[in-house]
Image (cartoon, rainbow, N blue to C red; front, side, top):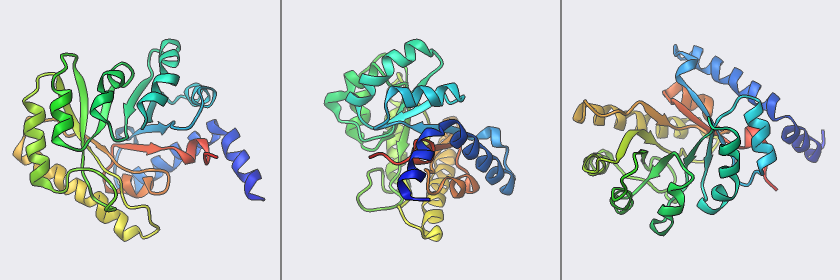
Length: 237
């Protein structure tokens, strides 16, 4: 099949794509002795229009991730009004000057990657769920570099009553080398275990790791939230 026909088929079958991802998720969970119900599926909807997002909603997907505040603000207020159960997470790097606009549309910030951002968000009074991002792969990726820096970040989050920490997130290197990918995910798991010992009363239940090219590996290593874009919506042109 020519590439453009394959791409069109992928884009036009969002419902089928979601069914396939759910089936692969279940199989990966069973392989690793896990309950598939422990794993949430997030649709990464950046560069996708409202029509495609709504197709995914009608197919039973209610959790989405966006990386740009302006793009999310243009698409999701109307969608959330129409579908009150929609949940939207910020998965990209957040600039402090866009925090006010981001708070108006996002329900959770997954990519807290520096103390300055935590302190800026800590000034709000509205309860906000957050995750700390750990750098486990490519040099170009953001995030806290090790367990000690994450530990200090946890203490900083806990100093702000409005912030509710619910776990960690990471991005594995974009490679076909499964060994490197597993190492990345295992680094996050190790950090979570260390933090849980240091902060036994803190919730670290959300482990956001795994994307279209590696989500089955992420599930096998312990992910509880997978972030899928291309495998749902097709390649963006």
